[in-house]
Amino acid sequence: MIRTHYSTQVTSEMNGTSVTICGWAHEIRDLGGITFLVVRDREGLVQVTLFKKTIDKNVLEVVRNLSRESVVAVTGTVKKEAKAPNGYELVPTQVTVLGKADSPLPMDTTGKVDADLDTRLDARFMDMRRPRTQAIFRIRHLMLKSIREFLDQDGFIEITTPKVVATATEGGTALFPITYFEREAFLNQSPQLFKQLMMSGGLDRVFEIGPIFRAEEHDTRKHLNEATSIDIEASYLDNEDVMVILENLVKHVYSTVAEKGTKYLEMLGVVITVPKTPFRRITYDEAITIARDNGEKIEWGDDLSTESEHSIGKTIGEHYFITDWPTKIKPFYAMPYEDKPEICRAFDMMHPRMELSSGAQREHSYELLKQRISDKGLNPDGFEFYLKAFRYGMPPHSGWGVGAERLLMTMLGIENIREVVLFPRDRKRLSP
Ligand code: AMO
Image 1 (cartoon, rainbow, N blue to C red):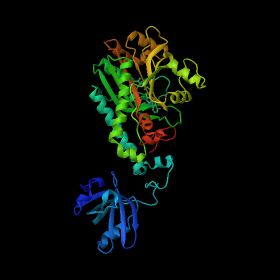
Image 2: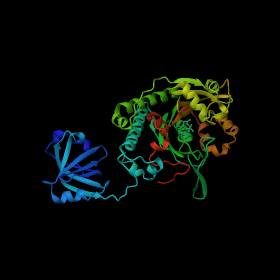
Image 3: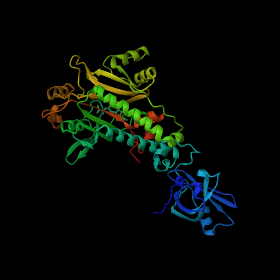
Image 4: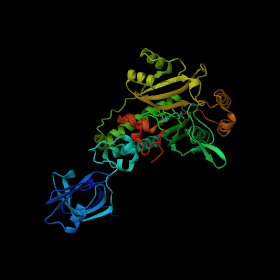
């Protein structure tokens, strides 16, 4: 191992000891009698100070010829220095160039010159070197970790389901067709059918965090063609039960990030307010009344437009649920109310800016489910692998799916969803 410490693991109390730091040449300032090299590693910055009078000539040569953003290993003695980042500087005994950087650089990493999002995404590897960008992905890691912990604690078992599939799951959104040997197949829109199969399979409570593919033509700040979905499915729970799990999960994510992500939140200039539970619940009927009162044109049975979502979000002002949706605009697997089949046990969980999640109690009667598939204009034959499980003992069950990127972007107040994905896939972008 070349590195002995990250920049932040070294303290001024280690005055006099020798350490090796690895990272990028963030800044080089040659003032004649003294040369400063600032090295940036994953955790922060370290100042390397070369005094012309005492420094080894070869070491000075290496540093003077160094191009910005080259990768170096610096071995040196820790010297207490109140003015340097972290309260110490390194007086080098050896500087080795491990990876030379060409110039000019594809973009600036110091944050001094602002690059537009396209330039940053084209050179994402370099954009990642900006502390601000890295902070987003450190928080994404914290978020996903806290979700896994929360669900594990609540008895959920993590599963992985296929992304190459034979049938659609979500009516309304288009599929990406692919060639699978001599057949046509698709990229999965959602683990929906597979997570439900696991209820018949007896796992009782499952979750998956994985990619979903939507061949939507949108070019907006909240849609991706490949997104990450956090899905759960649970037996013997109804729609209200899984809504409680969802609101508690959101609260848990916010409080974990607020507690453990302080450093990154500061880098982003973000202060998190943990949402209060229970989230407000309004029915679809109430939602469209609010939208209409705000001047939106919306008929009963219409899906909510972005404008309606915004206007309702503005009125409510915090996370909320919309429940009791018209059956005809929700997928076939949502369970209609027995006494009022025109509405169903489906819900959406909303942030004032956008929808974060959809979920429902599922139809678990084989006959009714088959009928619902036909009613949607789909051929039940294509769903035989799924329907079969409902003929051999399917418990009542419910679940939801949350868009990981939307959860993150709304928590951090980030405008464009592309900021929170390493390599976004959208209508125009397929590389890198
Ligand atoms: P739905 O299609 O509403 O429901 O998707 C669930 C959540 O996933 C996120 N999402 C997206 N995020 C970014 N870009 C997209 N194109 C995109 N599409 C969806 C959203 C959305 O709320 N099977 C159901 C879930 C369930 O009932 O369990 C489903 O997929 O945040």
